Image 1 (cartoon, rainbow, N blue to C red):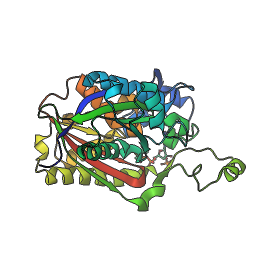
Image 2 (cartoon, protein in one colour):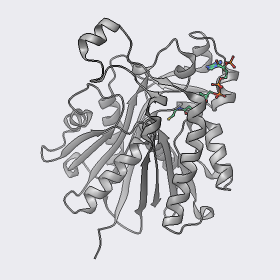
Image 3 (cartoon, helix red, strand yellow):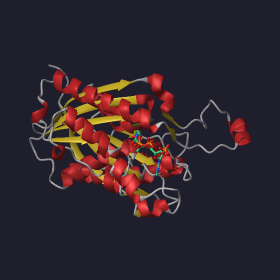
Image 4 (cartoon, rainbow, N blue to C red):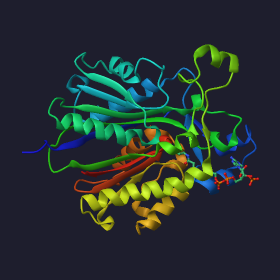
Amino acid sequence: MGSPAIAILGTGSYAPEKILSNGDLAKLVDTSDEWIFSRTGIRERRIAADNETTSQMAAAAARRALADAGLTAADIDLIIVATITPDLPMPATACFVQDLLGVSTHAACFDLNAACSGFLYALDTAWAMLGSGRYRHALVIGAEKLSSVLDWKDRTTCVLFGDGAGAVVLGPARGTAQIIGTKLYAEGAHARLLCIPDGGSNTPAPVLDALRTPRTITMKGREIFKIAVREMEDAARDILEQHQVPAARIDCVIPHQANLRIIGAIAQYLELPSDRFFVNLDRYGNTSAASIPLALDEARRSGRIKTGDTTLFVAFGAGLTYGSALVRW
Ligand code: COA
């Protein structure tokens, strides 16, 4: 009766070696550690090497998630990579990851673009595909090389983002751990508030060459801040209500790691103490689709999430997309 219970069987993450501190950024643009930290909570972020690709970071995180799950590449029949910084416009980064890991040709591999909500969109998609009984084990990965799409002269954006990857393995539940629910949303009316305005089919290659515009992120930060707080609160409240879980029963919230003030506002609205929220944005900045799985892996490995705990994931991002998920461990 019903779909089989699906659980997160393992987690893994990867962060590039190079650290770029707020002090380093102050040498590039007119900013300061004080401004960045007080407005965002970020102290430093990781930056991938020039020749390091999104797929390589994704594969490194995936290997750790497989080891954590006690599985191998041979067990995987679905790979979804959530990213806005694919290695190439085509083919999918998931296919490069498949090749790097040696996953069988019988696996389905594709990318998903829901920006900073990408991991939750991919989790929902993989959960449904596994729930259908047609796939058994999935790698759900969020990976970004955002440093490749930043304008390093624009202080309003370049101080916020970083590179990295996080991965989970989904499969049949082994105990009482399972995904309880997911909720996804989007408000396309706000699509232009946060975007890479050139480089898609809107600007065919010859036009782009003539424009000589870089393909970099543009953002209306203040507007996004207000919408993000409302969207994250709605997404959290909806899923808690739907599954009749009082907020007080959540052991750990893993929010999208964009801004400590946004996380603080959500904590206040949900009437939860701030120590219930896992935060690592001080060390990584906003890594978009990698943000939640990277934080999740750190939270698990540091003992912040234990067997029997209930966690709430909540995210917002370009689109504007947003969503939430409830997971029992
Ligand atoms: N260093 C120093 N000053 C900066 C700066 C920087 N890096 N970036 C902007 N400023 C300046 C602005 O030019 C502005 O100066 P002005 O008052 O003379 O015009 C002033 O700081 C305030 O800018 P404002 O944009 O109002 O600041 P803010 O308090 O809203 O903080 C963000 C800016 C971007 C940190 C904040 O709006 C935010 O986090 N928004 C959400 C963005 C986000 O999360 N995006 C990702 C979505 S997944």
